[in-house]
Length: 196
Image 1 (cartoon, one colour):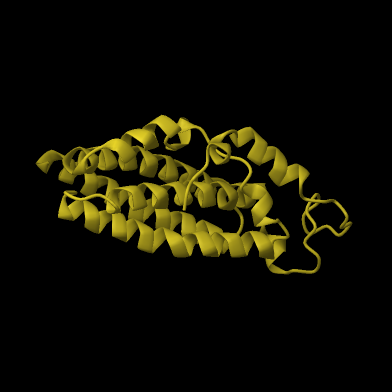
Image 2 (cartoon, rainbow, N blue to C red):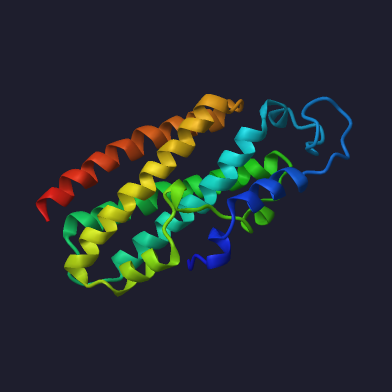
C-alpha cells in the first residue's frame, strides 16, 4: 500500500473534516453534530474517539508501508524482518477495526483518509520514507528501527490522549493495548539498535 503525500498533508484538515463532515441532521441528544441514527454504541462516542480512530488509521497505514519497504529488501537483519512482520500482523487488523468503528459511529472512514499528520505525531516525511527506500540491507535495518521508534512514540502519545479523553470503552481499551504493545516494541527496538 503506497502512502501518499496528500495523506500526510494536514492534521488540521482531518480535524475539520471529522467535525464538519458529521451532519447535524439528527436532533436527538445522543451526540449533537453527528448523525448516529439510533445506534446505541454511537451514544458512547465523543470527539476524542472519532479523532483517535481517524488518526490511528493513517498512522498504522504508514507503519505498514514502512514495514513493507524493509521487508522487500535483501540483507536486513533477521530480527528486524521479524519485527516488521509483527507490526504488520498487529496493525492491519486494528485498521479494519478502527474503520468499522467509524462506520458504526456514522463517520465515513473514506472521508477521514484525506487528512494527515505531521512529524510531531511520529509520522515520517516523504524524505524519511525515501531514505528508507534507498537504504541497503544493513543501513535499512538501522534506519527502520530509528524511524519506527519515533513512529511508535507518536502512536503511544495519541493513544494516551484517547485513554485520557475518550469515552467509548472499546476505543479506550484498544488505545491501552496500543500503549502496552508499542511501548514494549520501543524497548525491543532500542535494545536491537544497540546490537547492530
